[in-house]
Image 1 (cartoon, rainbow, N blue to C red):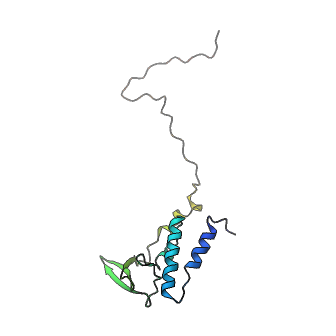
Image 2: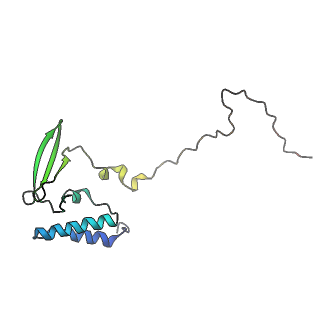
Image 3: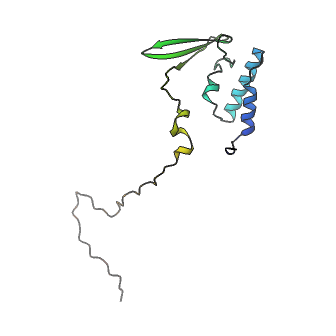
Length: 146
């Protein structure tokens, strides 16, 4: 096992609610419940899951059945535009093979956040004399006391 997952039961419940039932009204209810549970427990959902749910009516977006998908070009970039057939809300996603989501980048992973080298100590500036003040001659104190 890769390790303990916080709120494991909640993730299992969310996974169950994300299933694809035949009834669209039931699917919309399940997706709305899944979204409210994730918000209440402050859980991060996978971007692939978030892209298949309508933000307006919480219906499951299935291309050709509950949404339309079109490829658009704007300002020399390619976009995938999904439009929900229930509420007509559209979402745009960048369609660039070189584009990485933040969660997929190596620096976003918890295991790679540990620094291999220890932090460098700050220079001791408590005893330095600023350049604009003249340096005073200080006699070292002797450690022998009589």
